[in-house]
Length: 240
Length: 300
Ligand SMILES: Nc1ncnc2c1ncn2[C@@H]1O[C@H](COP(=O)(O)OP(=O)(O)O)[C@@H](O)[C@H]1O
Ligand SMILES: [Mg+2]
Image (cartoon, rainbow over all chains, first blue to last red):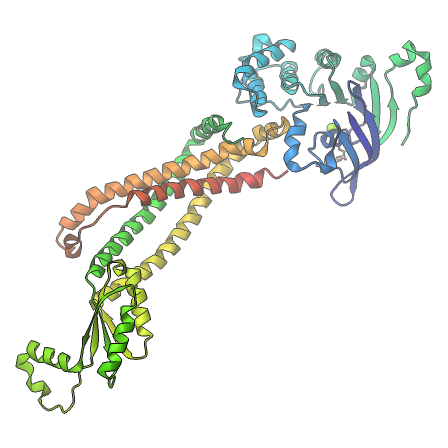
């Protein structure tokens, strides 16, 4: 689903944010990207949804080579990728419901379908009673649920979340993570960047750790150890 | 894409106008006045043009021959002139006939000619224009052509002031291009500026649109319609102002004593064609103005 080989990213002339990164995320996986602040997590995610272009190396997303993608095709690639941020990025002048309807309209969903689908997805994230509220009247957790609803309403193959719980307290953060887990169970490939190690440990998923723009470890889901002794051989923390 | 989302673009375009009310009104009024100035200019120009065209209908061209060209040679030239499509009739007036004519027209001044041994009056052709040649351009073209014939000494047509009017028209046309260009640039700049403010006010929304996979045209659409609407409303306003001025202000001006010239000439308002052109120009400039600011903002 996502494959990177030897990817480099510079900001300015000198500064290298990503230094020769290779990774492979399969369809239907749930992966954490961790590492200290400034390690390059956000940069890595931005390259996946074409907000930043790699300077070197190759990135394949959903079978498409991003370095060969025309600019006009980027919107269509993004319709297959839902993105969720720490600061939610909702449109404050629109109600919860209209935020979702807007996302459907932008990609050309027929008007007759938009209401039903917006309603369905808001029920999925447990916000059916808040549809007429405005984002700034909601709690952080609720706003993040709206953002997640918006990200998945078009049924993307990939969901990317950049520090989705960064602005939330621990209990709400766990709720958001289980919502992401639900979305994963339905077949979406989920990539979450976070430096919150508590969450990472509780979720027991594959963890890719970045430091200073390089991959320092790639650990498969811990339950792989417990369920199947044979897999131990396959789990090799690759360094560098 | 543009057609499919048209209702959305119109809706959003109006929303921007409402949201950005003050700047939009300022822009529309400015555009209205700019186009009004240009429209007033067009009214003056088209009326002067109509007046000259009327005079041209009655123009006769006289071409004078050089001294010493025999009647036979003149006959030859006459035949050549005949071949021009613009010429309907050619009458040869010999030196002798010219003298006779002068004598009969100025009987009381016959003494002027008494001392002369040879005839000072040149022979000439009196040329009547065919129907298709009765336009400013055709007359100018024909006169230029005749001027090149070596046997002819000079070409005269119409009254002197027809000629000055034609020169005046040329200058007006040049002024029109300059004025139109300047006003056009100003209008595009004004619209680009107001649209830039809207774009800036809604930049968060635009960032979201890009993230969720909106195409560039979808993002630009509402701003382009906003500019288009500003241009359209501004153009309509200018036509309203022109119409008002033409029907209420001009009659009073004509009635007041000083302006005799305007009283004696029948004036007309802009033709439907020109009205449509002004509206189209307003919309086009609105479109390009907003394209300029929105294009710059959307570079990834
Ligand atoms: N747009 C940018 N321009 C210049 N430097 C940047 C930019 N974005 C990120 N960086 C730098 O790149 C490094 C990696 O940043 P980032 O990917 O945001 O890390 P993380 O998300 O892991 O905190 C940081 O040192 C950061 O300062
Ligand atoms: Mg980050």
